[in-house]
Length: 115
Image 1 (cartoon, rainbow, N blue to C red):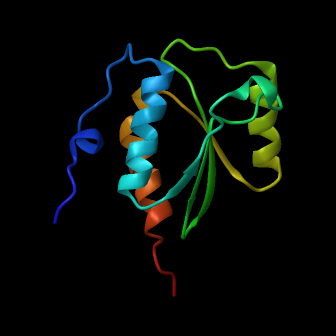
Image 2: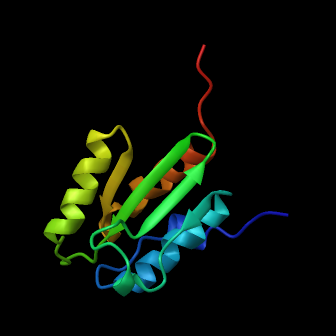
């Protein structure tokens, strides 16, 4: 049985909401067989923690999602910077990054073997 590829090959609209962007990302992560986490109600959580955590055989990714014109808060920037400084992989993704996101998630799900 083959899995549908609509959300993989079709670009996302520039005016997509952050909630819909996140929904597409989580569907894509599931399509690639990745585990994913996102806080449903962040009002009681530490400010700035990235929207999604994605786990696959090749590691862990933290992703902050923004609309095309969405602004990153200082707390979000701090989390992304500190995660990166600690050796973690952290991204700020926008809908225009969709083709790259698909490749990154593919590689997270299917690591290349090294000699």
